[in-house]
View 1 (spheres, helix red, strand yellow):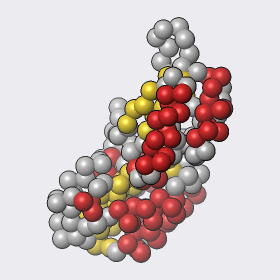
View 2 (tube, one colour; view 1 turned 30 degrees about the vertical axis):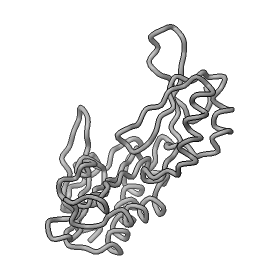
View 3 (cartoon, helix red, strand yellow; view 1 turned 180 degrees about the horizontal axis):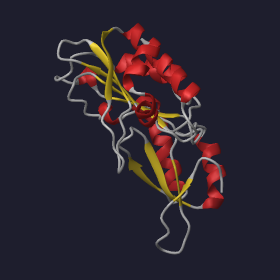
View 4 (tube, one colour; view 1 turned 60 degrees about the horizontal axis):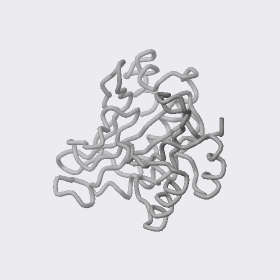
Length: 216
């Protein structure tokens, strides 16, 4: 199977594949959006907008995958199974509910940390208010603005069947401190996390208070 694709559920007896070109923080140029649509149409695929601020090209034949990636000339969303695979950013700069214009911060986080090799699949959410439309509290790391526009960081959130509520790591910090603390959290995770272990499970193993003492 060609790299950077996944096999869809086999219903018709015909194998079909899905790929996800990387769209930085959900922002895409009109030209690239048109290109994705034209390539999907050319190879008989469909498109799906995902909750992860990415676009899936679906129903592709295995023999076409290599050519499709070449024509797209884009990176895949997931470069490695165990890595920082996604940074979701809310539309805070354009939302009346927002307490902080967090898109710029989210882009800084994306450009500094996206694709970093880690013990397990990792996600970061960046939200301009505590409503957190992009579910920052269920991410491995969440950066959220409180009601006064101050930033705080949560860690260890897990969604899905084995869900875990996030812990608040630190409050009332600025953008520079956010970047430094995220770097420390990811370094700690790389040093002490077991292969395939989620950050939240590592926190349960060592304790949130010990994590705070080590990092802060």
